[in-house]
Length: 321
Image (cartoon, rainbow, N blue to C red; front, side, top):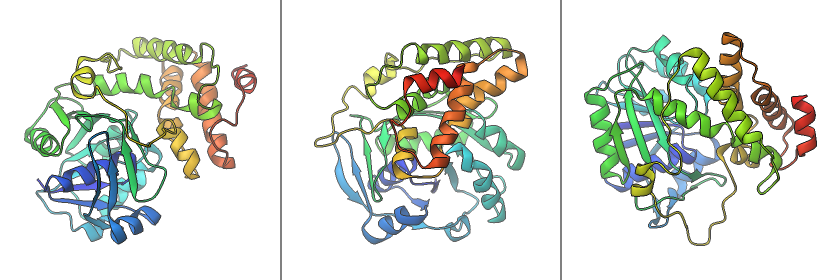
């Protein structure tokens, strides 16, 4: 399978580099400084075991990727950019190629299925950092990440197994999963706290905010009849495949939301994480004040160009009301 990676941030960049490093056939769709860096000098991939600059084909648009009938497309962009990316893929002639959503949140698959028939969810467990063009750091070893892949809304097929083969050779643990949205909902629960550290800063006293977010999520999942699979730090696959996290000389900068604020990206994916809980709460009559508040806070931080750690606990509590 030739792999098209749409988006080369922390996840997409790391995946594209790992596939290329293993000899796989990969083309990345990138933009801006990241595209220029990959073209000029390659992408510097750092993990506890890897410190290499990897060169691979990178283009600016799906049209330039020359996507063929046997290719697999990996969406590795934030949820707020999904609709535009899907429209670009359709304009480039994509029809029934498998589209894999390597994205946080659970709304991307539904968007993709409105335009394309062959959609797959992918749960990504890969502690990656992208704050500087041309470099991705993954704090995981010996495997670079753990992936669960399956068709949306359910089942698996040959494309899932083909992707698993590619990713396994590239240094990932990848499991086809008959109900991939269950671990994706479990990952969503974990990602709700991304904005907490980003807003208040690392090490800040956050009280019970993370627990309150989770409680709201579990309440709306129960109300909506949604099951989930826990994929936290104590999951056996994490213990087996990613027991090491130290990357020499690297100091972490926080979650993907904090990274977006540091880069001044202009948007964050909070509406597709905390906002998903707000949406489900409104659909099923469940109050979600903590997730509601943090969705507003995330949007405001991005809109005003503020960095991580610029909100106080008192401001958060006032926003929750």
